Image 1 (cartoon, one colour):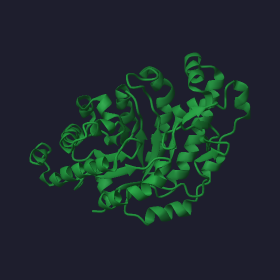
Image 2 (cartoon, rainbow, N blue to C red; image 1 turned 180 degrees about the vertical axis):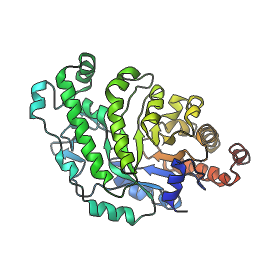
Image 3 (tube, helix red, strand yellow; image 1 turned 90 degrees about the horizontal axis):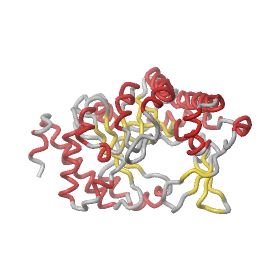
Image 4 (cartoon, rainbow, N blue to C red; image 1 turned 60 degrees about the vertical axis):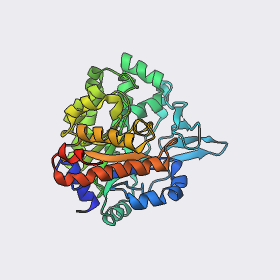
Length: 348
């Protein structure tokens, strides 16, 4: 069974022979990581990979006058506080509704080199994810600014719905361009909560955003693609919506949300690692990490439904990543037993 088939079996809760894995190397870390992670990659190769954006310009264009700032492919300005940190949006493009008349969608993102993408997919036995993220709620924040957007959601002026429709329609086009390639999955990303609550009420989400997400999911199903989603924050109240919409895999903060509560959703959605991985690493000892991973396994694994994803972000050590993937390898060896609890008892 190749790597792609392991992932598909996990997504379908069809008893993979081991737990798939993936290591993210975000942003500026890539240059540093290519050297430092060579040995780790050799021992723990990825089962899922993001497809390069063949045919498109770089997603980030640094400003020459100050390397902390860059412009993304939508023209939004970001500031990076440190070389390896994620950027935060600055200077929204649409501060008043007159700006909306002058703003144009980034049509360049629709000019993918489909032949190179398909060649990339065919040359690998791994599960391939689309190389672009659809981030509807966050894009509205970048374009309007967080404060303006909250006012828009409260007052709901007609111009807001014009902007929402334009961004959504463009994302449908971008998704369809990727869906017409041989990638295995399309990707969504929206952080819907802080560490304690949602940014908007579930009712407002269901009124304004869920119908649009349903269109993304419908497109994915039409083209027989899986749908992967990243969302940070306390999003527990939205998980039933994501499942009903048709999201196949979610990358979220599983320790923030609580394993006991998330276990109610096991077997219905695949947990694509955890975006609060620092909780696993905070103890520092392999024994403690093993215990934490075992808790994740017992709560979320149901003949599949979990991908051991990790991110090489600032503060994470190579030794921690090695220990993390070693633990999941150890857990994988016990899948042959098939009994979930029996497969975990004798790992020491």
